[in-house]
Image (cartoon, rainbow, N blue to C red; front, side, top):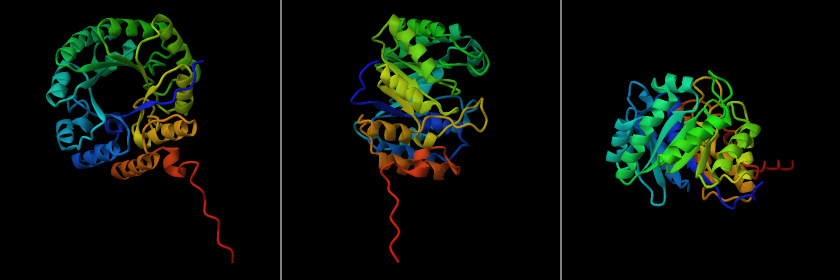
Length: 308
């Protein structure tokens, strides 16, 4: 087990991965949330995705959101793209950090993009070349890394083989997505052990869902194994499209609350994150699943009633 790190990097994904799985909200509301998150001290934000509006109507106004957003010095903004056309849009908008997704599960990949995993990997190799040629960095997110709602368990060796391929093709970072919340501490340990045994120096980021209540436990396990980069979504925004009614992304404020209590820095202001989560709840007009949004941090004390 590695020593606990002094600092963890959180990428806030609420404006993209969170809102993408919510009912559509107005462009101005998206800009308000993105700007509020930029002021929390978080140093990385996944801002938008450049996808076909018929596929994901929640992201149809990605260009307008990005044009209207206030960019804060010191914050690194990224965009997700599904293909070369999306990558060209992201580059034209000025993004220099771009993510693309492939599923470890063939069935899930076919359902998502109507292509096999192997076909998507061939496409991604060309996309990486395009991004590098434009001076941008490419991150490959491997969805269903810890299990697939159609196929069940995904063998760590299959995920590791995809890592080998995308690293060989030039990916700057690899992320493992727990797409439907099937990850557990055991499966996090199994996957990271296999991947790190093949190459201990691969830059890795983990993206956990809290669908079955294991997100913080998974994060802690990954910390113990030396991972220091994670995704999280303000308020727990987002959902699991294959588990209706289930909560989705790990809430940013829950992750930061735990990390700060462990003495691990994140650079973020927890109170500002809770304010942003409150705003997200107002903008989406639904109760968000974050426990810290409900109860507040453990340092928030209950006033003592006055004596009569």
